[in-house]
Length: 166
Image (tube, rainbow, N blue to C red; front, side, top):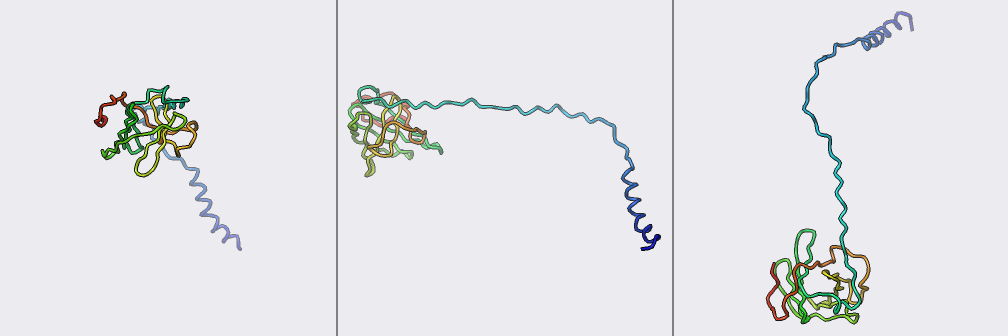
């Protein structure tokens, strides 16, 4: 390649590099902006959920008669009212009620309810009922809110045959 051809090719590059060195005027005005609040780091306190232990012979050591409720994640509420005469009233989220008798398990720390053709077992503790996976399942173990019925009302009278108040 000849000297003149090289020079013709290099000239545009030289002009481009020279343009990079140019400076532009900067607007020196200061724009006032309102104070912006710094985001606050919000740390919510940990709330420890209590799961009372199931005592030996809950039938005689726990005041179990009363109404217990189970609230689901979508805010549906079911209730079980236990009476001292070993009867119950079950209210489903849609308001339908069933009632009957429950029996105590051999260990006197669980109740068994025959409902919709199956036996449902609940461990009894102070102010809670724990739904157990089977009638012979251990009463101790991990707990969750999905299987914990919490007491909501005091004990009904044994002769009170009405449904629990909502």
